[in-house]
Image (cartoon, rainbow, N blue to C red; front, side):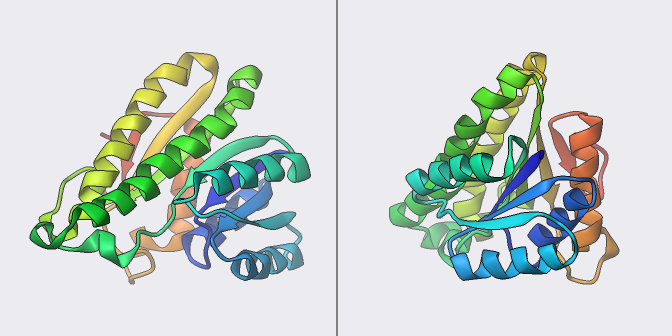
Length: 221
């Protein structure tokens, strides 16, 4: 079967994306730092008739990311879609004057080293098949620096730059790289930011293959 790997899968957006793609026939590889959490979500999806399995992947431990993606491809089938959407740690969300080198190191490991590792793990098979999608999910600081959340502003900017360059580099090889910017609270009451609505946007990004960046509530950049 064709597989979507969700790095940073949880009970909100990750679960909605898993159901959206699962109902389209995808197998679901759920990845997070805690095995019990992804196993619980996999059981819920299985009860809904969706093939799903959980894997441990800590985005600040790049070897664990590579292992999880390799295992998922072996267990569930080729990874057609990679979604990289882990939730930033609180120390990445401090004001710029309170942000230390250590805070930035963690943020870079999380957003840049983790995403690059994940992309490099899945890209060789995607380019060989000339088919695949990589979806990066970021908050508004991925497009507009915000001094109140300095860590993500710095790290998301680097992740965004990498994704944009990758988009241009692999487009002619049949692979689409896209970024969804979510400038509001997921599940905070605004229907635009409801997890199911965002999952629909990500499905459309996979199928429509438009520009690199899509911003919720705005025209495509």
